[in-house]
Length: 189
Image (cartoon, rainbow, N blue to C red):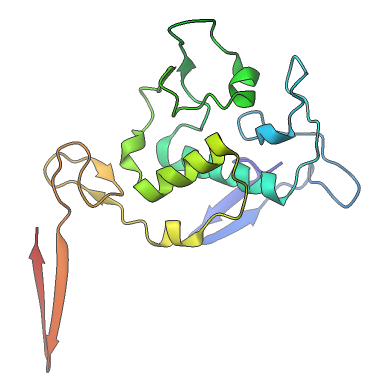
C-alpha cells in the first residue's frame, strides 16, 4: 500500500511512516490507493476496483513511478479527462485496464499540472515504459541523479532538458579550467 500518505522524504532519505496496511508473509494486504495501484493486479472482469493478485515488489515500483510522476508534474499517469472523438468516455477503472494515460491523445491534460515536456526524454521514456508497456522493475537511480533541473533565463520555465522546450533557449554550460592556483570558469551558450 505504498502511497504519498505513508512515506515521508527528508533530504535524500525516505521514511515509511504508516504500517497498518502492509503485507506480511502470507497475509495479503487487500487495501490500495486507486490512483497508485498497479493495473496488472486488478481484476479485469470486475465492475469496480478489485485486486485479483497480491501486491509485490514490482507493483511497489509501479507505485513509486506513479508517485514520482505526481511529484514532478502535479499529475499522475491517469490524471486528466478521457475525451475520445469516437466512442464513449472510459471510466477510471477502464482507463487503467486499457492504459489510457496522460500520454494518450484523447486525454485532456490537466491545466494545473506541469507540462510533460518539462521532464527529460529519459524520464519520459521511463514513464511510458511503465504506464503504457507494463515494464516493472526497480527505478534506475541514475535518472534522478543525472536530472539537471533549471529555470530558463529567457522565459522562466522550469525544466530538466538541455534546451528550454518553450522558447528553445539553450541552458548555459560551464567549463572550468585550473592552472596553478588560479581557477577560471567560462560560461557559454
